[in-house]
Length: 288
Image (cartoon, rainbow, N blue to C red; front, side, top):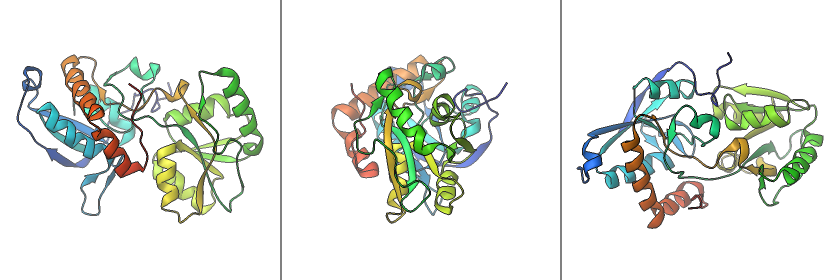
């Protein structure tokens, strides 16, 4: 059996380093949890990354700090290799995951999720002076996979300039699922264990494009001094899920309850939007 990120079945390869966030209990449900250990990759900017001094920083570490205070529970964020993240959760090495994990029906067969805290499309990154000059659909409205006719047309348009090209994607991601479902017959898919490596190979010319989340593309494009751009249609829904949420064990319903309540409060009072604008320069608050 091939084991992928979307399958959520890989051996845990724990990595180090934590961010401790503290508060005093405020609710009966929270009192059952004295410490919540939360895994993140630490290599998926601007969602999460390591600062030069080794601290975990980014949108999700900041959000967890807010959630910790609102839940009234001390939270500890630890870095964990993505390929082993779900196995570590189900094995009890930590209690939750915050790593831009998209909620999909396939994933919900394995673990539970909080309400979503981020929603963005997925698309392609290319180099401005690279082998692909542009892709159709740039600047167009997002394409929902639920609209089969519109999605089919967009895929057919993209398939022409992508034919014969090599596209990089992080292994076991929802973007990898999309490439394998809709584009595998027209292009070469090159998978990487690390998301940053896909963009490094794009910049070096070893691949023609990268498929990733819109936010991840924009973060890397911003660092490229205009040499890298997002190009082509952006897709939502379907294999891409309904947004990113906290991954939880199915046997911890009370933990889901307190995360959901805290997340709702960050949406209601604008905190989530403020953090999104800080890290993404755009509002990625999911629809209620």
